[in-house]
Length: 147
Image (cartoon, rainbow, N blue to C red):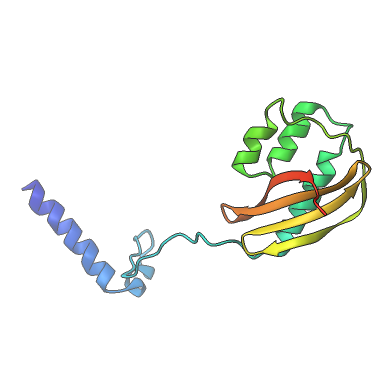
């Protein structure tokens, strides 16, 4: 008996799905079905402005000497990939010698899967590597810029 009830519920749901989304729109609280397969978007994000803004925010926080180390790490981690977040919260990720930025950041490498910005600091030019993660541009690394 339970099997028949379960099959009836499935049949009703499938008949609603075959009727298309317009049938479900008129009834609030109804699930909407689609006959197409939807896969999550795994391609890179194309929002260059977000990459630029996050790189600039990261660089600005990275050189700050006026905030406590725990807060400094926390603010950097908000803009970082999950891999870099793990490194930021270790003693191996130390505060930089640099204490100020000189001018604006500029793009050096720009691809759909990676953008590299360079920023001049009082301790030399640094490269901030951005990659898409979870539909947002995140900092994956900061390192001395190679010529």
